[in-house]
Image (cartoon, one colour):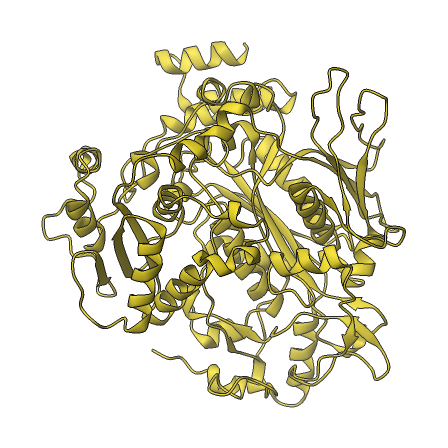
Length: 622
């Protein structure tokens, strides 16, 4: 029985869903049906508390929508979201600037950390800032709960959230990712981690009479994170020294290939918190990527940062395509390049190398290395007919202990049709757009509104990394915010006609969030729950009702429903296919971090007014 027979039998009713999934999984294990479980996901029964039924596209639908792009996407994986923090770089824009400029990120040990510097005098390393801080309230945790989390787990959770936001997968689009069992939010989590310094600090505190002990083991980075974010895919932490993060990516690809999840987030983290690991050139970092099968990503309208062609553990080196002259102009990211940039970063080594490769592929610029002292243009190779081929990068952080892992990335080159879609949006006639923002608290909402306004200003165009062209059209931005961001209790709805009006409305809200305004700027506080006075939530007809309002441009009525807390599947209302059809670059949510540490250890150098001692932040706020 092949995949077509399985699907025919399933749709005809002669084969139960569970049987079909098992047969397809067996076929997939020998490489026959790489992405077919997406077909079954579309017909999976909704959960009892599900929002209106999401749209899930099949592989065939993706090929029809995406043309040649999708047809050639077999067993390739799109990086649809990416985020990270590295030495002297709070985000990937700053990290790219450091890579491009060849900046030395080393320093003496940070003295502001609890217990002082983890480095002995005279040594230098590459460190992250503010590792004691965490925004517990954003994730619905008490400060006391957060203080028991390994700072690596806290940092990784923030970066995973930013990567999911970059992928447009923290709202209704996340709910639409269903697994083989029909459950929503089928995202796997794979974390590379090695150090356990927080446990060592806790053990020392125990000897002094402090009886607080952190969550044990590395499983909290994957299993605990998946539980806190309500993700239903597989979750696993892996420790394979410097290859940990790339190993996590390899495991994520395997889970996607087997159909165990619809998307996967993978990455790694390394913090140096205990003097027992003091060494010259010690490094720190954290990063994560979100992966989907390329055909699924195109069907879902995701942005594609790069394509992961294959990962190999041990064995022969992956093949690399050559141009018409037989040359293979390939970027190689190795342990040595990472060591120069962020130091000996342990479990974060592989994700930094992969991230650096993605940033260079995306910019078409080769960053300086030991042999190359300045950034250089990276032309695309050409085939025998003079057509451009995608740039290629190989990530191979050599590992002395155990088999090495190699990943092959290539630039995503969209077809002419898919690349024209955003331009069509830009040329559309001016019309009112509904821009929705939400956050867990009023302070978070105000902070994000301010960040978005700053990001949209013309003066910030260079800070986005790609010049003025990186600014999305209003319709694209509004759609990405509606469908790709979580609907949280504090809500802001803006009806605007152009970007200047959006910036002005955001500035007006930020200046005084408490002031009541007209119909174009509205807020809601849903801490007490949704105001579903007509019991519309969960009623099958509600989806058709909301869809009819949306098609009729009834923005007033739709806005009121959203502000009342009615779940709305925005992705289903306006699904667009092709790269960037639904997701465009946006700034991440704002984390309002407070220092939190075991035993109330003092955090010197903490910002004024932000709890000068971590102990002050370990009391529940209610």
